[in-house]
Length: 319
Image 1 (cartoon, rainbow, N blue to C red):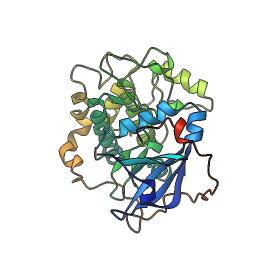
Image 2: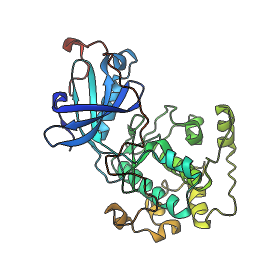
Image 3: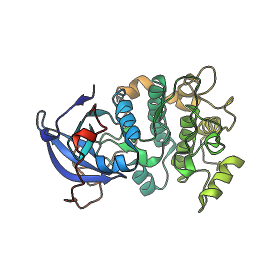
C-alpha cells in the first residue's frame, strides 16, 4: 500500500516530464536503492489555481489502486514547497510514440493493449473509480512490452447510480453524453476504449478535424468508417463501445464487463495469463536495459524554487 515517505530519503535525478503544476523526476529511494518516478507539484501554484481538492483526490484515488496494468503509487511526501506522488517508474515510453512510429498496430498488438486497458478499467470500476482521460499518451509501455494506464488527474469516485457533469478529456476521445452535458459515469471509459482500439488499428481516431468544434459535431453525428482490413471481431467490439445509446453500450449492460472480456475478439487471450504477464508481448521497446531512459525527451532541470507555503496555511495536512 502507498505510504507516507520523507522527501529527504530520495536522491533526485533528471526530469522525465513536465506537467501543469510541476515536473516528474527520476529519483532513487535510499532505503531500498530502487528508482521511482516522483511527481513534484508546487504547493503555491496548486493553491493559487484552486486545485487543492483535485490533487488530494488524485492521491487518495491512487492509494486505493494496485493492479498490473496501472502505474502504481508507492507513496507520497511533501516539504514546504512541494507535494509529491511517488510512483513506479515505467521506462518504455508512451504508447502514443510507438503508435506514431509504426503508423498503426497489427490486430494482435491492438488486441494486446486493448485487453490490458479493459482489465484496468474493470479493476478501477470495481472500486467505483472512473478514469475519464484515456488516450495513447496515458498508456505507458514497460520494458517487457506490457502497458500501464497512468494519469489519474481527471479520475473520480462515482457511487453506483450517480453521475458527474464536468467536461473533461481530449477532444477526439470525448463521449457524446459528456458533450451533451447529460451527466456521465463508467460508460465514458468504455467509449474511450472504442476510440483507442480504432486509433491503434487505423493510425488515427475515428472523429478527426482541425477544429475541436468539428470533432464534436462528428462525434455527435456518430458515423464511423471501417476499412476492409479492420478485423471483423475487432469491428464488432469497437461498434459496441462507440454507441451513443447508453442502454446499448458494452460495459453498461446487465452482464457489465463480462460482455467485454468475454467478447469474440478477446477469445485468443487468457486474461488470467495476461494478468500474470505470461503472454509474450507483440511489441517490445528498443532498450538497453530496464532503466534505459532513451524514451524520455531531454528536459533541462530547473533550479528555480517556488515560494514556500508556511505550515500554518498548508492545506495538504494528510501528506
